[in-house]
Each structure stands twice: as structure tokens, then as C-alpha cells.
Length: 262
Image 1 (cartoon, rainbow, N blue to C red):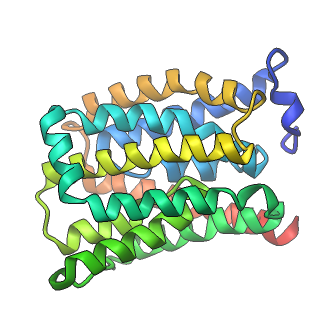
Image 2 (image 1 turned 135 degrees about the vertical axis):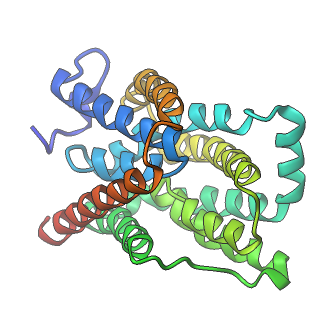
Image 3 (image 1 turned 90 degrees about the vertical axis):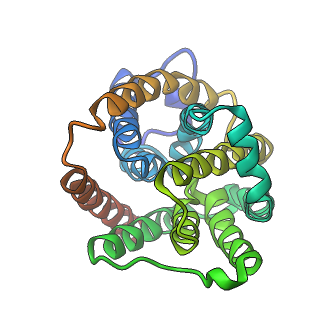
């Protein structure tokens, strides 16, 4: 069942077990996003790719991340979001160009190589965070830092739907306050997700087979985001974050294992 091809996910004819499993992963990922503000695409891609083909897993996360990032980016209002776009226009433009370019590579990448490309960045991010190491850019050269973050993040974003770690490193380097940090992340993720959506319509990863699944997962994503926001002030943030990183590490290692033995 876990290696079901695209056809088993077509409309009509969804395998209900796969749909329920995908909805559960999406719900968990969006709860984490609402509670601590990060890791939704990482949890989704590492979780979904554990039982779906890698291309299908990538397609499935696109609409849920697009919708939840729209909500996150507009929490402080449209003027604040537009200000963030102006302030980080170099980063956003570079990220979007790289997403659009690297997304076109996905259909031609062998399944094993794509699984490794999905799993290794997740493992690297989780391990570095658990070890207490935070990558930083040279904030004295902000334009160069934005270009570097956009090039690296956008390249992996088109392949995996994950372009957050370089952005987080940049914002930490610039000492951006937490609330503004969260808004900027939401804006960059939103614009990047919109480009990812368009790019994978062009690449064929998003199609009449995979698009309905992605649309269906918007509902558990919204429910999880609402629940996570409600839980935000009631959780031990550090402990919850640490266990989230442990789960990410394990799921990322599982993807690497599948890549090695597929």
C-alpha cells in the first residue's frame, strides 16, 4: 500500500487509508506551525514521503502551505505585509527565481535521489538545532546575505517545498524582533508558495491527479493552525520545539534510508 502509484490517488478513487494518513500528517504539521511558527513543510514532506511517492508528497503540501502562509503573513495587516515585501525584496526575488528554476528539475530526478534531497536537509536542520548551532550570515553585507539565502533556499524550495532554514538564519543574523520575524517568514513563505504552485503546474507535479489531494489537505491544515494558535501560550515552547525536532530528525533519516535501499 505504501508504494501506491499516482493513479490510486485520482478523483474519484482515493485510497481512504492514504487520505486519512495524509490528513493526520497535515494536521500535526499545522498544529506545530501555529504553536511554534515553523516546520510545517518539513513535517509534511518527511511524513507524507514516508508512505507516498516523493513527487506526490511534494504536490500535496503546496496548497496547505500556501493557505496557512497567507493567514500568517496577514496577521499584522496588509500594510505591514507590504512593508516586509519592500524590505526583503532582494531575498524574495532571488528565492522566487530559484524556486521556479529548480522546480522544473523534479520530474527528471530519480525517486531515490529525490528522497535523499528531501531527507538530508531535514536531518541537517534538525541536528543543527538540537545541537544548539545556528547558521548566520554576515549582516554587514545585507544584500549579499539576502542573495545567498535566496539562492540556497530557493533551490531546495523548488525541489522539496522547504526554503525556511536560510531565511531563519538571515533573520537571526539581522536580529529581527520575534513578531516582525514571524510576519516576514509568513510573507516570504506565501510568495514562495505561490511561485511553487505555478512552477509545479508547469512541471507536471501538480496535475489533475495530485491537485485534488493538495486541495483536500487544506481543511486539516486550517484546523491544525487554529488549534496550534490556541495552544501557543499554554505549551512549554522549548520542550515542544525540541520534540518536534526529534520527530523531524527521525522522519528525515527514514527518507534517507528509503533513498539508500530503493
